[in-house]
Amino acid sequence: MAFKDILTKPVTFKGKNISWGSLRKPLDPKDFRIVTVADFPNEIPLYDETRVALIPFRTLVSYPFSFPFGGKGNVRDALLLSFKPILGEKEDRLSLIPQITAQNASSTKGVAWLISREEVAEWESKLGENVSFWPAPLAFADEVDGDGVVVWSDAEGSSAVWLEAGETRFYRWVPAAEETAEELVEWVQNYAVSQGKQITRVSILKEGDASPAAVEVAGRASLAVVPGLDMLDLSTRGADNAEQIEAYFTAAARTLRVLSILGTIFLFFSLVLLIQNIYHRSDFSALPRQAYARAFGEESNNPLTSANRMLRNLTGSGPQMTLAQVLSNFVAAWKETGDHAKIQIDSIRYGAERTEIQGLSETTDAIQQLRDELGKHGFAARTGEVQQVPGSGLRFSIILTGAAQ
Image (cartoon, rainbow, N blue to C red; front, side, top):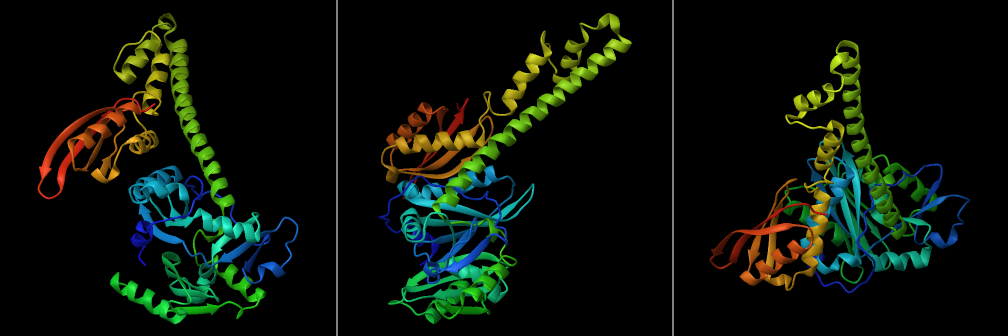
């Protein structure tokens, strides 16, 4: 079953709000143990030790992503924007955990893991809540040097992961009654061929064949070939804690940027005052206004207050809209819109002062309702061009301006 098929298949599980997990303290090799589900009841946890349980998740889905920007806040926003139209009302039943594999100032790569919160809760009720979760086959990635197919098989079924250069390309679980481990490998190989890829390395592991010590060695070796594996935790605790930490660091980074800009402005005016005091004592009171006028191209009787006002505009607390504000207010307006089957969003072109939404609609009433809801959620919204598309409906655009408070 392909990724898109899993997302569109009716879901009956329940849970909490969607969660994000990309910021965690990496696992310390000296303070954790890797344990299979079969061995879990027999092992005794040591004091202050993290246990990593290898779970053959049934509802788990992987989605590789690559974005031309850095910063975990941007990654979170981009993934939400990507998955929101697909998940719809199912978003509160899933956990979404990004695994960052490579990141710098201008790019981010990784894997987004989506899983049923109900399934995670079931495993936590069996194994306890103070346990980290890994997909079972991912812990044996070293068996194929991070490039190939690894299958973990037990009495209930088989789960497979396809890796390229240590990054997960695909994950799938099948019940034992439908496919054997070998048949699952063949299915994944055929899927890779359809994507223009060739899989040559295959490893099939069956529950009970490897001793707990061998599982531990394989899991630790896989940490070296799978980037970001030491940060991955599919448990509810890992996802929720990461969301809180990430929100904290996002706010801290924004505050640091503001303070840095304010400090630069303060230093600038201090230097101007110092130069004035030394060389132009007689013009001391007039120099700050002159410096402000030269720097910003306008007059001000209170230069520092005016510079602070301009700073608020630049950081999104003024009339401009930040990406996070646009996404948050758009999602809130979308939830209040009526029948989503009558309207489809194709693209959102973000700009700090102007954002454009484009899509298709069956009726003008649906366009009007979406525009009105956007107007109620912090936007100044107006309808742009509306064209009749034969066989598709009405192609429309909505222009968003104003403060997204």
